[in-house]
Image 1 (tube, rainbow, N blue to C red):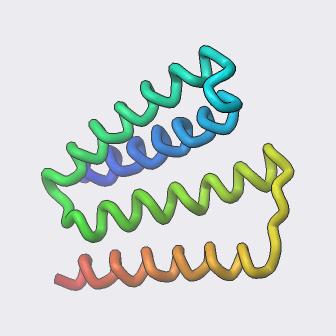
Image 2 (image 1 turned 90 degrees about the horizontal axis):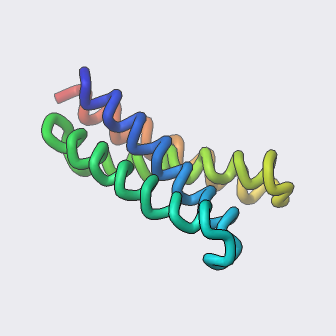
Image 3 (image 1 turned 135 degrees about the vertical axis):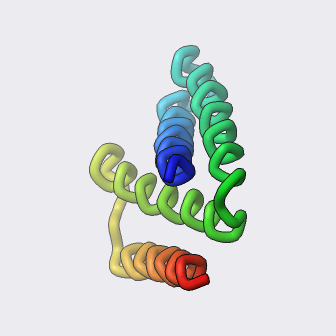
Length: 108
């Protein structure tokens, strides 16, 4: 069960790293620029620990898909990026794919 906690941490660190990219404004702001590397390093450590007990196809799809959905939400709510019906539909398809992969992995 620890692998799910590691995966959740990997997702949160990846989202923090990606948000730091936006806040770094092209590496012109020192602290967010540094945090990009810190958060991504922590994300990869946590993802590597996840892979000790979880299939890479499931772990990576959940990691990238959940990260994508969270970043889209942050973009909309924090950075006032547009949330169009097409974007919502595409995010929904990502989530559906994650659920499908996870359901298949659990059935084995």
